[in-house]
Every structure is written in structure tokens, then in C-alpha cells.
Length: 223
Image 1 (cartoon, helix red, strand yellow):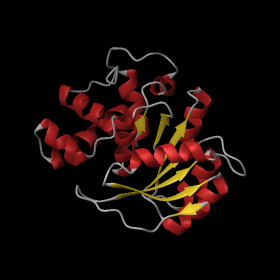
Image 2 (tube, one colour):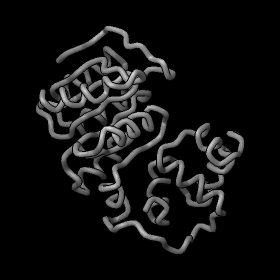
Image 3 (cartoon, one colour):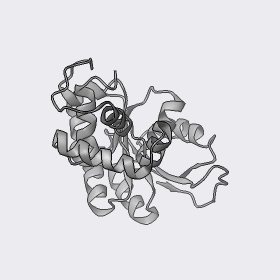
């Protein structure tokens, strides 16, 4: 178990404080090397098992925990569930070599905000981290379809009666974009985005971003 306290300079906004949890030192070294290239990211600690991850989450209160599933003492799903219950402001992003549907669904049920595979690019990893840190969700393209039954996403008839604008907002929400970014990209106000999100929840009967992600997959918006 390693902790770091040295501050990292940030030239592009608020620093995202990250805890790494993986029982393989080589993996942690590689991830840390990737993240240290970005001023807005700071690795504040490293855990070698689920129990240490919980302990460091309490001590450091990181913004994001990048967590492996298969770890000794406590696995990643057990640790994620406990951390989510005790420290709801900390976003958990699971990093795994497995795209098994059981793992993906377990991650969602544990309260984690995303699931990425260890062979993703550095760019996608940074996107995933910033997405969950900003309150969104992020699932690698390879595992996203398992949330809707394991089928490849494709265009289907819309049973919810969504408008074109609502579909645009739904896609952005599913990709983990915060309201401010959605508003900027679509050329509308943040208040309007919030209104569209409320309408979406009412139309599709979903109350959280994970469920909206499933709907976006069903409609083929993330293909």
C-alpha cells in the first residue's frame, strides 16, 4: 500500500485525485506512468487489494478509484460496494481484462460508475476518468452491449417517443458528458439540458444515468 501527498501542478482546471487499486505492481506502474503525463490528474495512492482500497478511500477521499476486479482479501466488487456506501462522492471506475457480462452487471450493481478494459488506449482511459469524475458513467464499447443483453447495438424503433433533441441529450448523457458540456455542444442553455434530462427520465421510466445508458444502447445511439 502506497500513499502520495506531493501536490501536482494543474494548468487546466481542478485536479482529479485518483486512487489505483490493483494487485499487480507492473499494472499500477503502467497506469501511473500514463496518468502522470496529464497535469489535471494526480495519483494520490495505491492499493494492492480490496481491503487496502477501502482503507485508503477513507484516508484520502479520492475523486476517482481506478479498481481491478480480481484482487485478494476483498475483490473489486466487494470493495466498490462498501466504498460506494461509505463514500458516495468517490467515483469508482473498474478496470479489468474481462468482458464477461456477469462482471459488467456486477459492476453496475456495486455502484461503480464505469467499466473499462485494460487494453484501452490512454486517451480512452483519460476520457473515462474525467467522465466519472464529472458525475457521468463510462463503459468501454466492448462491454457496453452486455448491459442490454449482449447484442451489438443497432438502430431500432423508438418506443419512447423521444424528440430529436432528446435523443441528442440522451446520447450525450450516456457518454458521461456533464450538463455544461452538453449545453455548449448543442448550443442550448444548461437549464434547457436539465429540462430535457427530466423529460427523458419521465418518458423512459429511468431515474439514473446507468439506466439511461441502457436505453441509449437499446436505441442504437452509441453504435
